[in-house]
Length: 178
Image: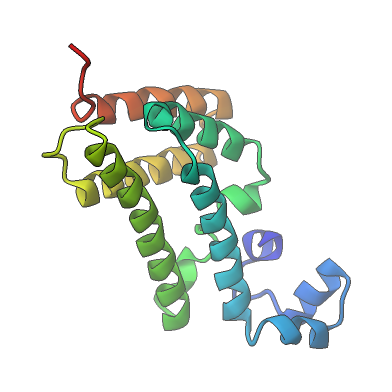
């Protein structure tokens, strides 16, 4: 993902990838059929990180976990935290890239929606909450803060902003214990 991020997806070759990781191009082709498969692997790796982070989250810790995950994400190299951005320019000219990013987004929505549905079942958030809509709002907010970091927002300010924004977005959905 570092090569895609720094040099662009279209200009990165399988030879470049092989050199970067210190293997032959043939070795890469054992694991990946194409450069698109490498990109899918990058997206999938990041989705797995999110799923692992959410898997065992106590419902009462969902808000804090989101902030913790974002704080951890800010410590990652740019090519990992911005993995989806480097391929955005390729979407219109390469339908495979558009499909990969669309699939990654749908999986991201599904993971968050499942966690929101769990919170509804446990009566931690209102049963009237539209899980799909809230998942999409949270993803949009997350991606917007990441874009702001790319545009110069400091990472510490981004972490604070993310925590406050998550709290604000979720406050109308969380049930209070009267």
